[in-house]
Image 1 (cartoon, rainbow, N blue to C red):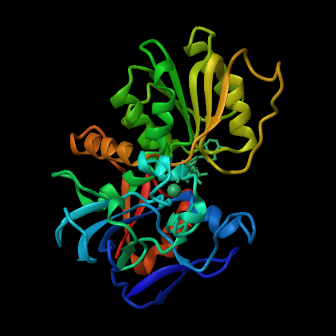
Image 2 (cartoon, protein in one colour):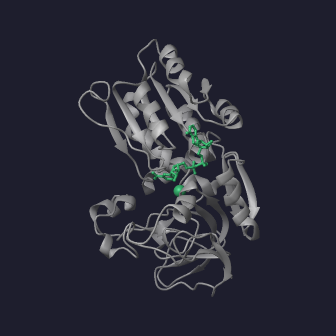
Length: 348
Ligand code: NAD
Ligand code: ZN
């Protein structure tokens, strides 16, 4: 079969022929429907090198995947061939308390996982291929009826990650509160929709691209701003001078973190999701009183079922552009150039 593989750090991916996977006991091979192209993959190609992560190339890219059950290994029950499924992509040890709760993303026995702190497309072979081996059937979530398997692929990360981040702050997202979403790309446009569907907060979006701001508005943002000197003032004005209760930074550069710090309200949450590598000065007077600064990583398996449910009920719609596997490199090129809206989904 064909697979788009990262062969070494600091390199572009290559489309190569690899043997078809075959499932061992408890494992499943799926035929890929869609594999989302995440900005994190660009960080993998450009920003990381040996020793930074506990795993490394070679592996097949693609950590947001859907497909159809193709072949079941011995002992797998509850799934049938041809059934559409989403893949929960963080693959932990399966036995620590976090994994038992469905939070493999924070597995506490990384040495017991297939690779430490990894998953499909992250140290292990992902879904930018004709087929993918899922090493444990528990990672498959049946797709609810009515969901298009291709458009559903980004829900497993671009949907799940903001859903998890927003749930962490749900106590603060009361009616009358304000949430700011910085970066309205793959994750950000779904973050706006998740805020709209699950909270009564006023939603403000910030992005440097006008077309992303239009997507933010159609996704549910009341105010869409380009970053710059006036963004902080306008957010303050829109909140009666108080600032935003929750700021979700889906970029994570110095400039977006500075904007986040400049608009967050006292006792608010400043949540960093983007991994552009920026930093934020932290000391007693650096932020308004009692601001919580937090990072989040991916989400849990129960949360994925909730995201899929929202989408099946029409409350989340992924804006996506599809590319055949042979053009996956072009999808990443456009993601990097900023000429994509929402998510690129690779369909073998
Ligand atoms: P994307 O490229 O689809 O979207 C990024 C958006 O941010 C674009 O619309 C772009 O125009 C905008 N942007 C870039 N710089 C900006 C700036 N300085 N000010 C305002 N807007 C700006 O990316 P994505 O796939 O949505 O990923 C977003 C980030 O989240 C990436 O850093 C990615 O690696 C990270 N990520 C983190 C997790 C996690 O679990 N923490 C999971 C997935 C992705
Ligand atoms: Zn991702």
